[in-house]
Length: 205
Image (cartoon, rainbow, N blue to C red):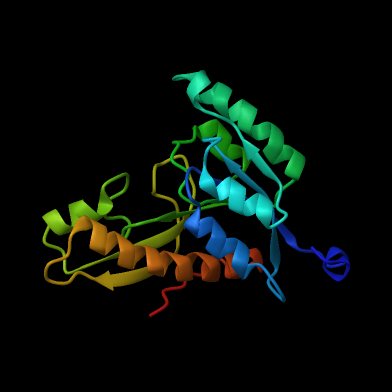
């Protein structure tokens, strides 16, 4: 952040990832210029997540809280995760491929301030294996959704969706690649609106 940016009141954004963080990169690269937000932390449940290395290279603070030593104790893991999050004092949290189910208590701590990107046209196909489920159902289209995070899995208010046609010969991998390209457009556009105080839905063509 430049000195000039330091004098401007930006929304502080923490991003949670589990792997390469391609959506995190799209968000970070969008938060420049007149964007109303800036990234202040990238955190992961996997210390080996490649996205942490990329974020650190951009000068963004990073944190790794390995979930494995906590076993099934999700609350204890979340308590550990809260330490770097609270130190970063974020206004908003973006889940970007964060592959841990968060407890209702954790979500309530950031009520109305946490976003997620999901690779389906919610409310269709919450959870995993979304692309194969769309193919198995014979759907004509798939897509991605940005939504507010609530205690109900992938069921929070929808902030934006992009539709992706399913074409003959599609596999879960080929469909996933095309949907991911649209995720990289939808998530930054939705975050920009949300950070400026606009919670209306956006469905870009």
